[in-house]
Image (cartoon, rainbow, N blue to C red):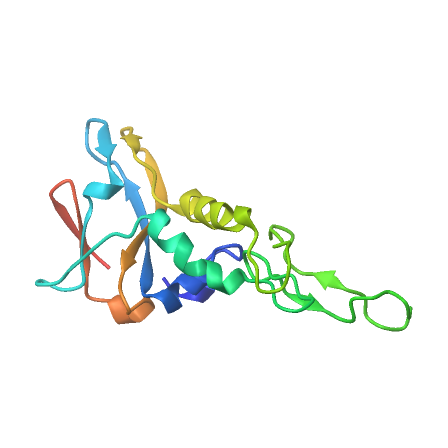
Amino acid sequence: MRRQDMPNDFPYQMFQEGFAVLEVRLTNRSGEARQIQPDEIGIFASAKKKLEQAPTTEIAPRLLKYYVRSGGVHPSVYGDARSGYPYPADPNRARYESRNETTVGVPGQAGKVDAGTGTELRSRLEMYRLKPGDLEVGGQVHGYLYVKSKKSGAALSGGYIVVGGHRFSF
């Protein structure tokens, strides 16, 4: 996936840290329920190169450096877009506005990270990750798989995944 295709609250900095995201949509067209186990899905960049899935516990700690408070600025888990002057003293000036309501601020002193930031990053990644479970006949599931790869988006084209012995190109 490319950054522009992802939800606004997704921690896209993972692309800079050597991870890629694959969006997976599965539909069960067989005559029986199937078990989905994301950890058992094989992901291949080419016929010879298997990509290793990255657990959220490995990704989240590497993203913390993007959420360190510096000076008087409170970064957020998404990178809250702000506009205008933060103090409403002059009514003619644009007021402080947050353009993303789902962000989580990072309190604390300059150069510090709040203890809850890592947990929030991990929960955001888990929220979008493909979940294990049963896929009923005619049912659909959707989610992301995270892999260790310096390439992302179109650079990963030509690869494939293997789910339950079936091969699907991406």
